[in-house]
Length: 134
Image (tube, rainbow, N blue to C red):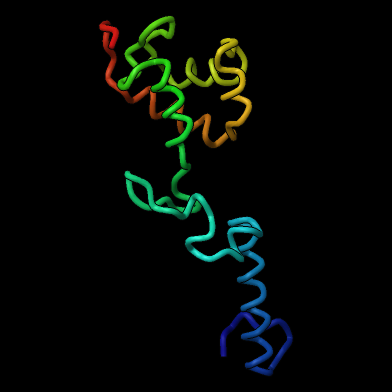
């Protein structure tokens, strides 16, 4: 018998209570939909070119990054009227996506979650800087 029983001597009842408590804990961590969906029912769980996405460990930024590359170039070194943003500080990228949003990026930034904004900011800040335009 486990030492976590709450005034119960019935082992089956104790195990059931612990299972329910564990399930509630997991639902609170993952969210209701993630707890009840299968591994392939969520877009986050589907495989991408970079490998399978994990529920909590990674945030899928593949779609937003495609939008970044469409205007800023493949390596985000700038093209046309869009500046070189590769290597910008995470704080500067975050400001560009949240408070000082350029008019051409408003529609894209409105669709981003706070976790996606953080992940995109970190990813762009780790990219190699370049003075050349692509």
